[in-house]
Length: 164
Image (cartoon, rainbow, N blue to C red; front, side):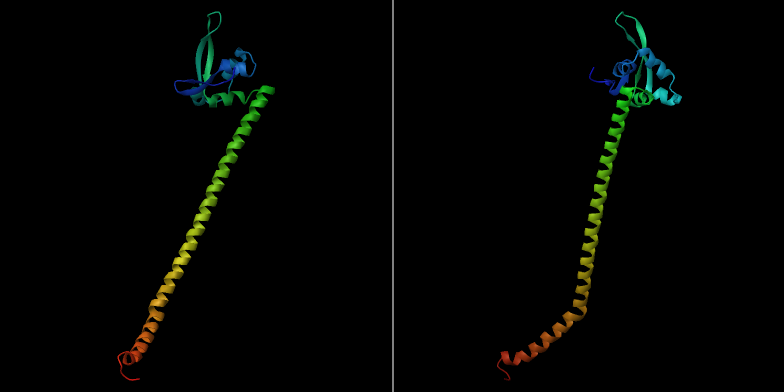
């Protein structure tokens, strides 16, 4: 068996039979373990559905269908090498996803900080340019205009053949 999950009514589930096969346990022990779970009735209702299957002799026997959450709740109580391997794999997968999300988050924070710094630098440049324009318009431009006007009045007579 390659997979412990299957799709039923567009939901991903597993069954007590698949769990028994995967963890090399008797199916009746898996049924007993599910019945003994110490979870709330609401959790049980959402994650475990009593069903039945037909064995090779044609008998209808009980089995449970369970969600991912039900499966995790069940097998986290298992012991033995297969259960230990599953728990390690689950913890490693959880940590890998956690690290991935943190690195993505850190990358997003770094991008935000860089964009904020660029915005602040652009704002500073624009403010400095505004101050420079203001000083230029109030002081430098009028002084330059006066100087041009004075020199122009001195040049006028020379340009039109007046005083030398």
